[in-house]
Length: 412
Ligand code: HEM
Image 1 (tube, helix red, strand yellow):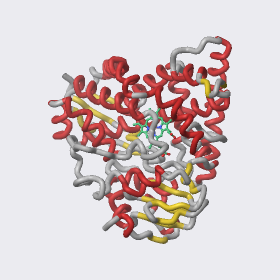
Image 2 (tube, protein in one colour):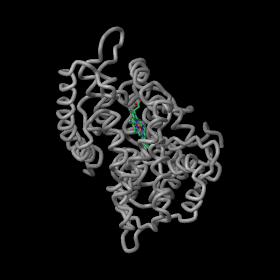
Image 3 (cartoon, helix red, strand yellow):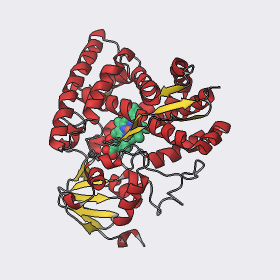
Image 4 (spheres, protein in one colour):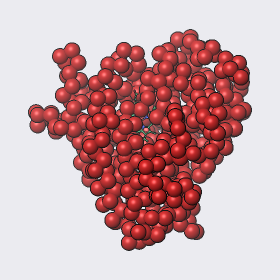
């Protein structure tokens, strides 16, 4: 069936299964808090690839999410979207659009290019090693707290230029912003904004400290503070709205992805053994497990500024628009055998880092961290599995993570 023939199902939100409501609104859905949510996403894709509900429209197929992500009339410049990220104002560049968005991306993209990230590999490996040293004698580890949280947090804070000893404080703000599971979106937004206010007060003191120093430091925050557009420095509000987004994006998503990837490999011993035997497969394996695990479920709150269309489907001004990355990554129209995890999959054009204008700015850092951390973990711990008598706990609120991941290992 050509994409233009795919029907649009008309529904009332409350009549949909909880998981579909969660996907549409980017809100908690306990039925997704399981190690293998993929069959639920496959069902969504089969049952209603395009869905119109009373508040807007949701797209589940790859061709539609890619097209929707590119459409300049569909924006995330929306108060509820700011609030759910703990902010009262638009975060940069996620909540700005058009020429303004392009201008910010032009400034920020060069900070995190593959060429800039490559030399960090030895730092990531050394950090992974020092974390593994802490538990290698024990034969077991709570992998989320002892590896998946500290590794990306410490790397990111070093790069961004915030004190590493503040990681627990910043992770606390980030968890209250992104992981609060209040069912009512308005209440959830209030809790997020209260935590965001505290985080911004912290960031304001760090920005003020640097202003007093005069000379910009050689880190990402220093770069943002020294940027000029048409001869004018970014304002403190702009710097704050960039820093706020970078901190929550930098601290949350790699932790979530790393925990999901190691969780999957712990449950699939043959694939794990293949990767350990041939580390050259790690890069393609990471891409495939990002496609499969896809930690960021959907675009976090978009709406149509004007009447428009996506692959021929009318979208009305004011519609809440959902682009579901998790289902698109399982679309048989985009992948051969999407229900099979193939660690050597070629031409893997997944959308785990989104698609279109708001495509992830930190993907090269994330990939470097994931590849290096998984490789070093395999080199050091040998065969590993989920600890008997203990169960992993997955949380799918906003970003999917194995928040409790008990791993036992042989050691080498
Ligand atoms: C595996 C880890 C990561 C995943 C899965 C991920 C995923 C995503 C996704 C899906 C989006 C689009 C959000 C939307 O559509 O509303 C996004 C945007 C973004 N990400 Fe990431 N991300 C990751 C790591 C990072 C890191 C480490 C950073 C920062 C250092 C970062 C910074 C950003 C920024 C700034 C945007 C907004 C881009 C824009 O609006 O133009 N991300 N990311």
